[in-house]
Amino acid sequence: MSDFLAVHDLSFSWPGRTVLEDLNFEVGPNQLVSVLGVNGAGKTTLLKCINRILSPSSGSIHLLSSDVLGMTIMDVARQVAYVPQSVGTNFPMNVFDVVLLGRRPHLQWFVGDGDRDKVSECLHFLDINDFAFRRYDQLSGGERQRVVLAKALAQEPKLYLLDEPTSDLDLKHQITTMEKIRSVVGDRTAPSSAIIAIHDIDVAARFSDKIMLLHDGKIRAYGPPKEVLTVELIAEVFGVEAEVREDSGSLRITIQHALKNE
Amino acid sequence: MTSLSLQHQERGHSQLVKIGLMCVLTALVSLVALGQGSSSQLDVFTTARIVLGLDDATSVQSAIIWELRLPRVLMAIVGGVGLATAGALMQGCLGNPLVSPLTLGVASGAALGAALAIVVGFSITSIGAFAIAGNAFVFSLFVVFIIIQLGRYRSISAESYILVGIAITFIAGAVVSTLQFFATDAQLSQLAHWSFGSLSRPDMAVVLAVGICIVALLPQAMMWSWDLNALAMGGDDFAISTGVNPMRIRRNILVLSALMTSLIIAFTGMIGFVGLAAPHMSRLIIGNDYRKLLPASAVCGAFLMVFADTIGRTLFAPIVIPVGIMLAVIGGPVFMYLLLQSKGFNDE
Image (cartoon, rainbow over all chains, first blue to last red):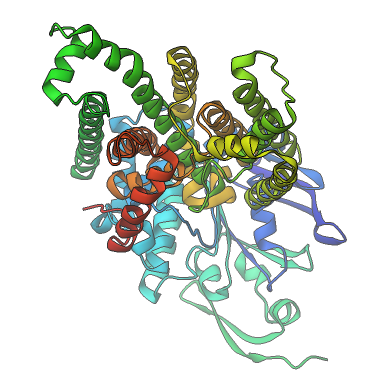
């Protein structure tokens, strides 16, 4: 079986600084991959390269065997949805219209009933239907984050690229939102996968099929949570002492304290 | 359809009704404008009947309406539509509410062209009647050319366009000042008069030509409304993830709006305020969805221009105050009041 997403020798540099160096990895269908790493490790850069917001200096990206780097921006948007860390604006629209922008890659100019219904479904799914016609700029940070996630869902992509999608959410919504992302990705009738840049190592361990540890622009480890999230690797990459245990089948990670610099 | 979908559809319809009402209001003001003037005053109904050919107007009345006032009112409508659309397009694609059609330096290019024609007698277009307007147009096209060249740079950002526009404004302003320094009193007065922004210059042929060009460009602007929504709502990264190529679309939109601006400014002189105020007033009424905002801005621009020009013609008749001045004097305070009253567009 050909891989869902295949990334080969991907590198990216700003003038004078290499951010990503020769990344090689594959993501299968219906997989949720969490990318972990310290600030500046290259998590956001990796997502932006796959979405073509940044142009990689070398390497190749194939989604369902098509060359992503050779596609038009519109073709990429039909298959890949990206949720940035935050979206600020000078010209706010209402929530429904923001989510409707997710239908943009699929419609010509006029909005059909099907597009409206899809938006409506996504709003209900993420529990933001109560403020469907409130202005985006009058929402809290967490509400905005769910609106932009709903826009990505309305896009019906094959691949979700989510940059810290739960960073502004309260504790309950962090869990329910991750569960919902998990259920969307787990839907075998419409296979999709997600790559999520995230800081919360415990949430990543609970919900991910695979974990990618980025360290200094390289993949330090990539695999199932139990293989990657070991006490030694966490100490090496994050500089913290952690306790790792298994609790009824799922991995639980508690950070104890920061390690002193050697 | 779900109830949310229905609600969304209904809101769309009510926005269209609002735009329709704005059209009716603009048509009414235009009729008043056609009836009012220093030489004769007609009420709205008589004017309407004359315009529709239902009334046997005296030859003087109909000559005044058809030959004197109609070109002026039409130019006000065309200018308002063009400048307001250009303003809305530019604000959206640059993601900046402070932008107006004058920001990119197109008008400064036009002013330089006009100053060269008036002071030095240098004009690229040698046709006598169009020496000034033609030169203004050619020099503003030169600024459009600079914008196209800027668009070739991969890393050009929205802010860079604005900064280059400001630089062009300074450079052209310096040359115009130098020309003024050497100009005679008569030339100075002619140049000052050009820069006021007036609707009295263009004759019917010019109005029709400019009008046809502007109307021909409007559908293209509408085609970009989704791209504008993505750009204005979330900036470049958000736009790319929505399938919009921000670099290319921004350059195309700026070239189109600069063209619209030059077409109008070359014949009317400096009219800037309507391009800033009409889009913002429309945002307060319609919201920020460009599919509705562009037509609303166009109608609002036409209304403001016709209204301001009519006041300018009648307030101290027979003295006519140029529309550029009237727009700023009446529109400015109204605009400030509206912005301070509301905390943005009313979406309930």
